[in-house]
Amino acid sequence: MSRMIEPQLTFADCEFRKQGIWLDPTLQTIADFLDAHAEMIEAVRCDLQRGLKQPHSGRRGMTPPQVLRSLIVMRIKNWDYRELRERIADGYTLRGFTEFLSRPVPKHDAFNRAFNRLTPQTLEAVNQLVLQTAIDLGLEDGKKLRVDTTVVQTDIHHPTDNTLLWDTVRVITRLIGQLDRALRRGVKGFHRRTRAARRRVQQIQRMTPTQRHQQQTRKYRELIAITVQVVESARRVLEQTRTARGKDWIDDAVIDALRQQIDHNCQLGQNVIHQARRRNRSPTRRKSTPSLNPTRI
Image 1: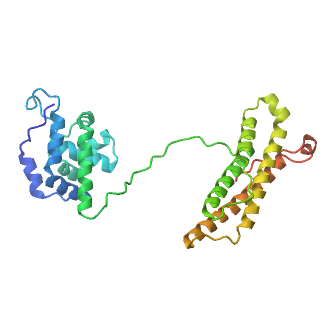
Image 2 (image 1 turned 30 degrees about the vertical axis):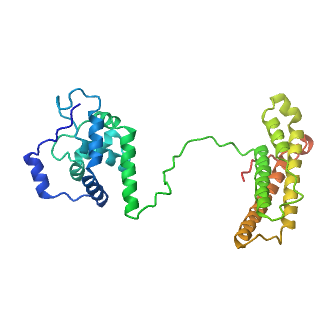
């Protein structure tokens, strides 16, 4: 895997240079940055030579500048190895940026092998050099890190009555706790029923078909009663804190925002309670009423 000797320019390469290749402004800025920091190329050269008994013998491969520039293009454009090879081979400006010019572009697996030889320390050194340059130019302060998020497929539970009731208890209790910490004297008179509500939800979800037929209605009524207590207790807290104020205007804004969220979730919780009651009536009354479709809130 010899790629240490810089290849000699051909007449076709001289013709490329003579015509002048206008790069994309982003690629041109990167090219100027790489030309001004030869230490990055030297670090890549050391990685490519690592483990080779005779670095300067054998067939010629990619040079360190070609490896680093190709890796940068792949990361910027978010291409895979096959697309990277095809775009460089077909692109007039990309050939100039990656310094392949008129020479054949290696196959995709050659890019894979070359990139895998780069050590984490080399990539970290490149990142630190870019960061330090950005700090020197005043583009960044180096105190915050911006990263891209990754979307991961996950299962979302169907909004059944028991989970919606549990969400009502959980969210309202959490908001009341935040309001309690924001107020000077805290919140008084709120009954926390999260443990009781969680226990009922788990019992409903773990029922066997026989238990569901015999106990589901009773457990649902207990869960509904707990949710009603939480909603009514939260409304009393809203009434008590109607004129409450914080230490400054920032605390006042936080308190007002929390009270609005609590009131909104109480309204949603009331809708969930009505829906759960309609679907958990006694069997005799349920026969005379049409079936209701689940309503998502």
